[in-house]
Amino acid sequence: MNPLLLPLVAAEAAYVRRTIGKEPRPEGPTTGLVDAPTQDDPDPLRLLVIGDSSASGRGAPTHDLAFAGAMARAIGKRTERPVEWRALGKYGATSERIRHGVLTQVTGEWDLAVLLVGVNDILARRSAEAWTRDLTAIVETLQDHAAHTVVPGIPEFGAFPSLPRTLRRYLAERGKVLDVAARLVCAGRTSVQWVSSADLGPAEPSFFAADGFHASPAGYERWAQAICDHLDL
Image 1 (cartoon, one colour):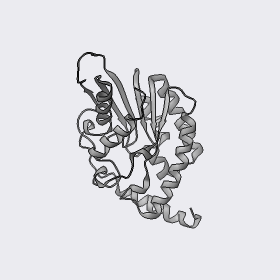
Image 2 (cartoon, one colour):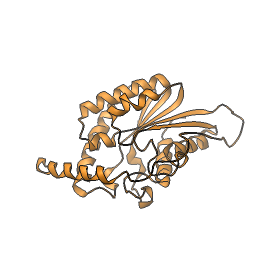
Image 3 (tube, helix red, strand yellow):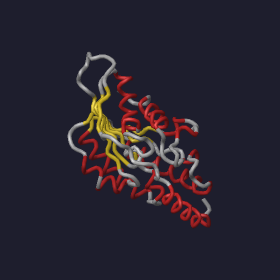
Image 4 (cartoon, helix red, strand yellow):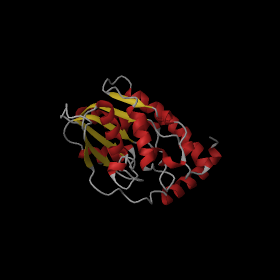
């Protein structure tokens, strides 16, 4: 991007940070259980969803209708096992804040951990080096707690209706840079998988909540299913 446009990008990013996130926080518990279609295997698969506002379910009225619940249902349908889930998220969190804050709340053992992070690192204009350092630390810690860790790629910013055009272009370019770094962090780790968000395809208006930035319940269902389709379960 032309460096002369960076002041405009900074101004647009500051405006977006002030105006998005007006959606109410999800109500209800941050844990749940999705029953299996059959009771042949009563042992539940344990799912941890951790990360930023998407992990915290912003844009959905309850966590059951947000990403954690949607992911649990997708996994349960595919594996025909009950799924016990927990959501740990922080609105506006970068990878640094997740590493030093949200991650400290992770305890116990999980079958699958899904890490939703990256959007706020780009909005905060964090470097690829800082992103790589913090993401590596998060992934290594999750490996100690989860049998399998999934790192979805950063969403396609070009589809976000709330973003001004110049900012969208900048964020899309930075997203590709951080995605390359994330793939390198995950590569070679047998229990860690990076999944591209490009597989979601064109985002329809129903994908987004009213703020045009966070996912709606329908968007979370579509996102979770796209990730589940790529998992080795």
